[in-house]
Image (tube, rainbow, N blue to C red):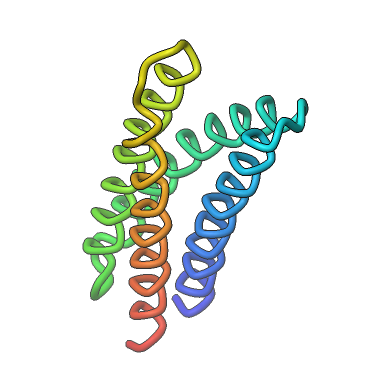
Length: 126
């Protein structure tokens, strides 16, 4: 069981890193770097899929582990917010005046992902 718990710590840390990298791509995009728009878009799609998969897998595999259900629900919430963030980003790219929502929501996503990583750490404390 300890190996599985360490695995969740790695998964959640990678999600935090991917969300941070998304902010780096956004900054590069706003600075006019051409490849950054594609990188930002591709990374967002990967984040939507990976957070949803991580949430579903954690709910299934950690259902009998103390704090496991909480981690699973946190990851599912993260997946939903990432999906909303991606939708807002797509609308912004098409001209909607939503950057004022997109940027602070990205900051909140980083905090939520960090919360998931802390939750994975609690699995290690058992």
